[in-house]
Each structure stands twice: as structure tokens, then as C-alpha cells.
Length: 334
Length: 201
Image 1 (tube, each protein chain N blue to C red):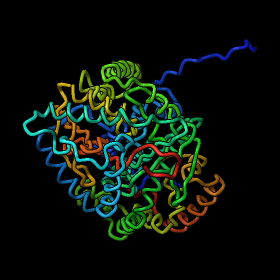
Image 2 (cartoon, rainbow over the protein chains, first blue to last red):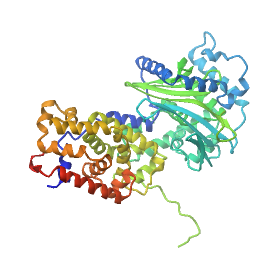
Image 3 (cartoon, each protein chain N blue to C red):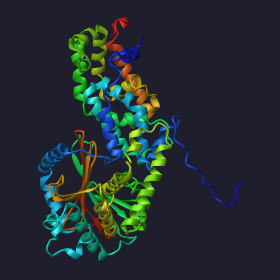
Image 4 (cartoon, rainbow over the protein chains, first blue to last red):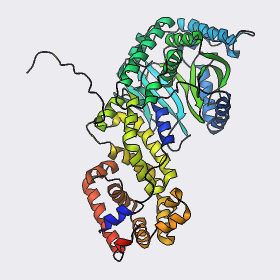
């Protein structure tokens, strides 16, 4: 027996397996950032507790970026700045039902988007995203800043403080858009090709979901939970929307159409007051299922998407869009 | 033969025999396919990490390895059929952060005969019984290796990687792997010269 055999036998008699449940769960959460069903009140308390902790940890930076975000956000808000906050800012008109408040928010967002300039192919989409990161340790966060040219020709990011422009899209930008697989270079072309009529847009999403379901079902040995993750019916539409918002900054008219789909959906509820992980308050659309509550958070004054948050089974997955919008050049902020 | 048109081919179906590289390539547009990679390699990776650091850190390392891999899948060369060198390379970077803990546990095993890693799996009595004189000597020898030598040694003997795979995992030339391995073996032979190989447990 040589020295390599001796080494090979060291600790070879220990149990073969370790518990991979959490590792699998974390990977699936990354693959499928928005769970398709939700939990109840206990989960809601858990989210708020964690949000408070996050606010302390990242307080100074996020207070600054949050203030800027509130001032600029997406192009849709430009026409509204300087004016009084809309009633939706306080969760809608007094006495209005939650459903009515949601419709009111969608209506205001649609009005604001009507005057927003259309995105041009040579412009850049800026997104500054905050989310839990695997490194350096679970729970830590780092903002990810990416510029994506609308025509998909170039991408830009900061490396060691310097702007890098690349032909290659970051992996985070290569995820399904409304459940349709689109390459990184084509994603904004695809988004801008979508109808901004809410009913027509919903039809497209339902069609994409069915195609995605067939595609996944055709893969041998794909875990059933990943096929089921697409959900069914209205909750599947909500999940597809939440997953898309998780990765992409939407053009104002498309974003308003999304809000209308959510507001008109009977399984989607309106939350008049939510707090994101940066400590910013807003309103939200959410669904509640057997084990998960998933919420899409919105700035009620600017109608900008703020982030999403899914809690349940003692787990929490969230992403905040600290700032997003259209700019003329890579390196600029909205 | 040039027919004057481009042949449009249907995407290759993914099945149990599909190479890792093909799965990773497809996962760029169909992220859920990456779960197949986890099913294939998580258990082996977890066992390797657990042998080095114990089950607790190993669970975190497996989770973080696959999260990092998923996020970096766009950079993977899909011509590489076996993803293990890539995955073990990512895991190795994470394991290296626990370098001091790893050495401390090996030295504890060598000194006391009680393996802290084994204690994580079993009760204390079992751990003490499991650690014979040969295990203690091997642990002492492995603990005293340079970290670079230990990585090469354990990637090949515990993870079962070939030299070229270990080179890929570590991002170094294969010749460097061989030289590190030679130095490690020389030091091990010197340290284990009087070990009775039949007594290792």
C-alpha cells in the first residue's frame, strides 16, 4: 500500500451523504427566483423582521440611492415630478377597496406612461439591483449595475470602478421574459415588440407559459417541482410577471400594462403598505398560496417597480430594483 | 455538398446521457436544466467537501458552489463534457477560505486521535474508535503539506479527478499539478515511512 492509498482511506469510512436539502432549495430559488405559491401572516412578519435588519446593514448607501430613485426612477415619472403625490401614494382614496386601489394605481401608471418617450435602439437601459448573494456569505448583498443597449448590441458594467463595454450579455440577462426564452441581445427588442394592451399582453404570457410547460415536460428527469414551478392559471401569470420584473427594467407602457393585468386579476391582492429591503415604503400586488406569499412592490408616487419578495417555509427570496431607467449613454444614471 | 442554403437543425434533446457541457449550454436559455447538473454532482461534491471540512461547512460549500456556477454558466466552455473540474474548482476556492480550520482539524486528529470532522457525523466515542495510529499519522502528514499540494493531492485521491482535470479545476498547467503531486508524495513518504498500512481506519 503506497502513500496515496493511505490518503485515499483517510476519512473514507465516514457517512457518504450530507443533507443537500438547503443547497437544492437555494439553487432552485436562483433558477426560479419567484416561487409560484405563497404563505400567510407568519411569513409576512418574517419578511419585515429581515427588512429591518437589511436596512441597518445597508442604511447609508441605500438611503442615498433610494432618494435618487425616488427622484428619477423610470421615464414614466418625469411628467409627474413636482406635482402632489397621487392618492395611491397612501394606498388609494379613503374608503376605496383594495381592488379599487390596485386599479387606481394601474390607471395612474398608464396615464403617466402615455407621455413617456419611447425607448430608442441606441439608448441604454440602466438597472441597479440589490439581492442576496451567495458570496461572501449567505445573506450578504451587493448591488449589481448593468447597462444594456436597447438594441442588444452592447452591454456595460463597472469593473474596478471603470466602465467596461462588452458584446457579451451578463448571464443575469439571459433568463426567460414572460416565460419565453429570449437571448440576452434580443430581450429588449422582444419586450418592445409586446403589446401594451393589457388583455393582449396577458394572452401572450399565457401562450408563452403553455410553451414553457411543454418544453420542460419534455426533459427527461427534470425535477417535477421545476415543471410545477410554472404554476397554473392566474397564479402562473403572476409568477411569470414577477420573474420578469426580477431581471428586467420594463418600458413604461409595458410596465403599466403589467400593473393593469395584476390589478384586474381576481387572485392577486393589493397591499396598501409594504417596506422593501432598503427600507423604502410602497404598495404591492401579492398572491398567497399554500406555502408562499409573493409580493411585487411598487413606488406609489413614481409607479416604478421597487422589487419583489417571496416568503414561506422559513425561507425568503427577494430582489430590489434600487434604480432603473433609460439613459443616453452607458455609464450614465437615470 | 453546398446546397445553397443553411441547414436548420433541431436542438439536441437532453437526456441522461447528455454531456454536462450540453446541459450547461442549454441552461443559458432554459435555466431549469441546471438542476440536472445538481442531481449529477451535488452528492459527490458534498462528500468531498465533508471529508475536508465536515458536514456543516460542506452543506454551505455545495450550495454556494452551485449558485456561483449557475451565475457563471454563460462563461463555461460547453465543449468540456465533464463539469466536475469546473465545479470542484469553484468549491476549492470556497474550501480555501477554511484553510486554517482544515489544518486545525487534521492536527487535532493527529494529536488526539479524535477527528472533529468525524465528530460532526457521529458521537464522540465512535470518532475516537475510528481514528487509529495510521489515520493519525496520515492526518499529520496531510496537515503539514503546503495548501497547494494538499489541494492537488485531495482532488485526485478523494475527488477522483485526473491530473488534467485537477489542472483545469485549479487553473494551472498539468505539469504544475504533476510537480506538486510529486512533492506531496515525497513529503508523505518521508512522514509515513514507519506507518503500518494495515492499521489505518
